[in-house]
Image 1 (cartoon, rainbow, N blue to C red):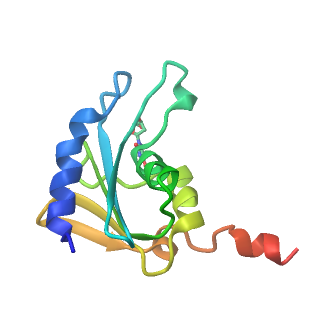
Image 2: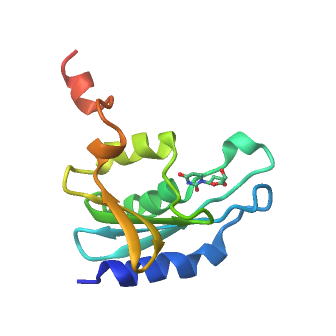
Length: 133
Ligand code: THU
């Protein structure tokens, strides 16, 4: 199984694919699925700013579009020291991530923090709310 260092290296290398001409802030994300496959994503900006897609949603959407909905971990790297996922991405992750899914926010391959979805989005709205209706 691919290790965290290698995943972080892949995410950092993939920052070059960021389409961020407006903010010049590159973000890259890599997900590792339960099947052991990796999918990459970058932020994709738009002249109509609100249309911008974040790297995390881009990576997760790649996996889902290829038929994979079960995730081991996600790595996030960006142009700040530790690039935290935005609120929309946290809610998006919540839909698919289990408690044990690792959310790795990395500065570099030797310096990273590991969270789960409850750390980053406590008391979240989820499919369970809809089931209780
Ligand atoms: N960005 C991400 O890709 N992921 C996040 O979770 C935070 C923000 C991107 C969106 C935009 O292209 C740039 O960072 C600056 O906000």
